[in-house]
Length: 481
Image 1 (cartoon, helix red, strand yellow):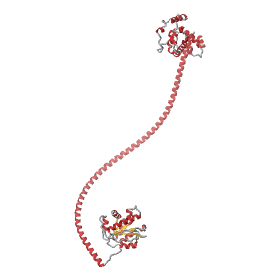
Image 2 (image 1 turned 135 degrees about the vertical axis):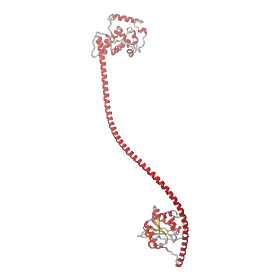
Image 3 (image 1 turned 45 degrees about the horizontal axis):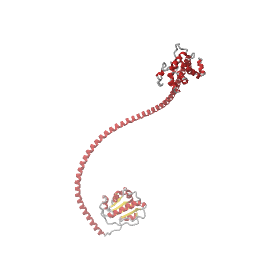
Image 4 (image 1 turned 90 degrees about the horizontal axis):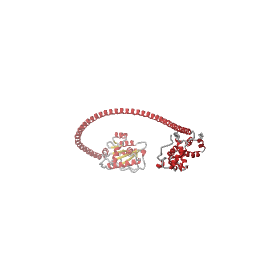
């Protein structure tokens, strides 16, 4: 390629007169005349400039820029005088187009530059001038010196240098390509390893997903089976519900009909009961009159009989004889019967029996206490029961006897309340047997009330004419006292 390049926009703009090589500077005309007179090739048609490789061209410009400040001012072409004043690092960069153009167009200037460059090159410059170059020399440097000196065969030297530069460039390109290929191979190997690891991970993940899929399928089958069973049960329950609703509707209808019939019967029964109450009231009035007359007759007969038999009041009662013979008593003697008291609010059955003349109340002690307040100690149970019976004796004036099993007897008991006899069965005999003895000792016709929830005691005393009552009747009576 020609050495001349287009002008650089960064090169400082020269004065138009200074850049014009044909006019304006008498020195330039002198140089041109001189160059025309001294050039041995003047008048001969010049051969075309060879095409220089870019490294060779840059080296030529660099060598010329280095020599330029050493030339006398009059030997420096006008276009390069300002370039010569540039700093070394800017001279070759900014003045490259102007330097290339002057080297091509001004043979004299090239000869002056060549003389100084060859002097600086030493043996290498002498070898290039002779037309030979050392094999170990830099081909770019050899080509640059050959272009400036232009010895015999200089074009071949430039061509050889261009070939070497191109070979070196090609080698560099090949080396770069090899390096890039190696890098790509390394990256490919790395990517292959990463892909292998990722593939292993994906295979493991696939295996796990397949396992989970199998579990999900099994769970889905179980859920589907459960759903079918639930739907079947729901259908069955719906059918049963419909059946039961029908039955309930029929039963409700039957109950409504029965309720209407029962209400009708109830109305009839209430009407009949009203009539019966009226009749009973009239009959009771008649019975009360007859009973009063009978009691009055019996009372007068008893007074006459007592007067005829001349019976004196007795100090001991039948129960006292049984107690002396078959029971153990506390240290204090039982108090005699007291006057009869009136009671205004007592349980009906027990109150009716205790209201009879000369009634005798016999209580199975532990049977009552363990049923009513068994959480207390035996001593507290006895004390609470005896205290309550003392209140009943004081209210009714009846004879009261409470019997405990002798195995649980406690010595040193406090005195019994007035009208209450406290007995303990002797060794070898139970309180139940002692209660039956007390009932058998009473005369026929005397009202004897026995309080015990023991069925055997109740059956035994009933056969001897006593009135057995459960322990709850006495407990309720004591609770209201």
